[in-house]
Image 1 (cartoon, helix red, strand yellow):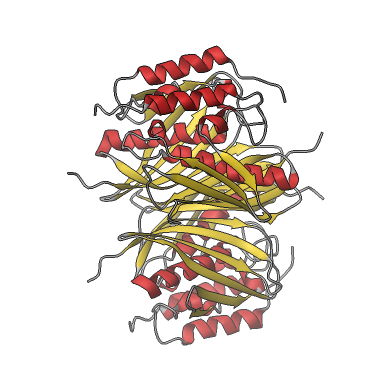
Image 2 (cartoon, chains in turn purple, orange, yellow, blue; image 1 turned 135 degrees about the vertical axis):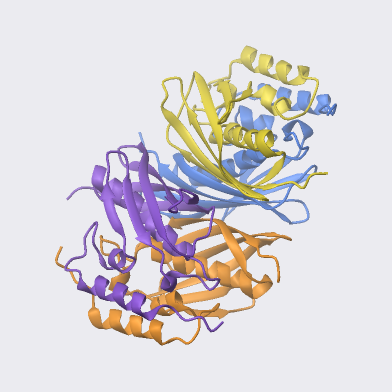
Length: 145
Length: 145
Length: 145
Length: 145
């Protein structure tokens, strides 16, 4: 396959990533490189981004690992927002649709909050509201310093 | 946190990614950006890479989504090597250890091969052989053109 | 541990199971033995049952495998109701609470319906509405005869 | 479907279950009803049982929930044998083959042991050694009294 990525878009993403002044929740190299916009509502953490071809798998659609990364960030940032930092014990991703272009919106929510263990879920949809992926995960809260 | 990423390492990864001439199994933008070395043995697809700080989560260890991406690539490339391209229906990742530096080696294997559905598994280990992550996944083979 | 199960309750369940005249969706030996009431609404398959001590794990709460069985039945019966019989490729269960007595209500819903692959989800709650378990699964539709 | 279960086999299983004198690891109502033989080797907990038609799904093969129960018991008993009792946070089951008759042998192993969190895996095979199911799970150790 002689397909090449859009170099200008890749360059812009890389410069955006390098240009950040910090590495923290809501704003870190990977989140900037992926172009993630991360916000919190009363019920969920919303993570949205524009699909770019440098994030494709070899079959020419958004790589599942990148989708998993965005969903993981939606869940991890929801946990951090509500309770503080945690570590992912496990996560499962179901891929219900492929996407080549347009905006993906992920929504991460608390499923069940325990004292040390929390369960979260997330979903990703395209601009038309079609479900692209569904995730569940289990986290262990880090002890506070 | 005022931590900044190693800009020289990030630049080198980005140039390596842009420098590639194709977008195909074994060699595509994301695989080059992550620095993945992808090979096949008789039993498994081996995917190895060096942990870099621009792949960290906000807590300063390799992001689980990047680990998931490498494990997914190990499984997807194993399937492609044995049977041709497929689409991931789902995957689950258990994170058994965190890593900040050094080389990660992933090993993707066929668990059970069906006519249209295949089950795969993968594990990631550090240089000392410690298990970092364990994955299982379910794939649907794409119909051949 | 010298705990013994409630023999009258176990006998009643066994007689109920044996007394059934058929082995079909909605009414089969295991569903009768577990005392499952299986109904369909516009959005979901509802499976409810009373926790009995002969369904306990060695630690004296409802066995996770029985909870998984009820959730699996809620999802499989939802799929059957909407589209016909399918085979489970995989399912994941998160256990968010333990239960010793009272009624469990499971709710199985379609997450995303494809031509040959369907994704479902289910949840189990106690009488107070507390989440006991959350499940997701992937199914392959059986070809119609 | 007018299929009926083998009543003699079901009766024998029920009497075996009722006849037990205790409810403990390795020997409890459900394990006796399913006819589980539970042993430990140096590396794994082995749980084996004979498939009976009263454990079928409505499609006439061993119910996935029963397979999940046996695999869960293999993992939970391995954990109990090595470290003491724990609670399942989550488990995932991949169903790679169906079975109607004969003996199923499950093998539960520790994947990674932590201070409070343990990861386990298990597989089920038929008498010919064919893989029927593969499971992974995450457990939280119960604090010792």
